[in-house]
Image (tube, rainbow, N blue to C red; front, side, top):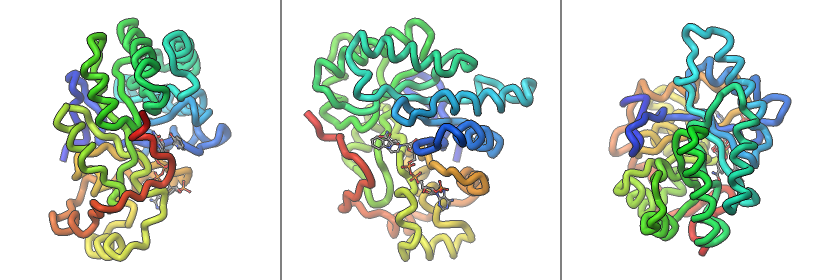
Length: 281
Ligand SMILES: NC(=O)C1=CN([C@@H]2O[C@H](COP(=O)(O)OP(=O)(O)OC[C@H]3O[C@@H](n4cnc5c(N)ncnc54)[C@H](OP(=O)(O)O)[C@@H]3O)[C@@H](O)[C@H]2O)C=CC1
Ligand SMILES: O=C1Nc2ccccc2C1=O
């Protein structure tokens, strides 16, 4: 199993990333630095998380530590425009702000619209501002988050679409599988990034998770991350515990059988752990 996937624009993306929601300003830089040291290369933040600057500092610390080996091109920095930053002029300003937060990184690898909120016009205006950021070289590629099939179809039919989204970041776990949406994304060459891939830590005691972990000699967290990878998703687990980072990245040395994947699957549950805006108008 490769540690990278190919995006629809030909670029590559790490098959696992590191989530930074709820990493406070005092800890974010240090944890992100250690995440990179442990082997994570995709770092996911957002305006909403109020830690973009510190996340950038953690990345720069890692780059500065060993410039011969730690290259900017190896890091895949993702941030997101929040709902209050939508609309053409607003998004233009907000993108510049996002760049200013991480000046040492020079560019954003992936910029996501954090939600489909706001309606068709706001979605297009915001996306237009994001496309211009790609044309200016500020951003390498674009994506969306919590977009449903209807939102994506609306974007595909827009004659202004120039830079197709490369990913849709949605909540995905064995208890929130969204099979139809995932299938639609994959058929349209949009990769699925799995947010809250550990179900926010709430499912480690499920019988199937525990027994598979035991039989494989891995941890429950590793079982959930491996499930995500085998479904073709890019999981972005978060931890504030530096000691858990090596465990969360070490998910390429074992495989779940089809039967084990089937034991974990709960296609008929829709147990999302936080907001669910996939079906907003
Ligand atoms: N686009 C969107 O709307 C959303 C995006 N996200 C993104 O997805 C990322 C991940 O999702 P998130 O909701 O944070 O939740 P996760 O599913 O990643 O779970 C995080 C929880 O799991 C615990 N944990 C992590 N690793 C282990 C381990 N090896 N063993 C035991 N417990 C562990 C963490 O504890 P501890 O930290 O104490 O170690 C924390 O409580 C976010 O950080 C964010 O970047 C999340 C929600 C919405
Ligand atoms: O990480 C996140 N946690 C959230 C909770 C509510 C809305 C958005 C988010 C995130 O992006």
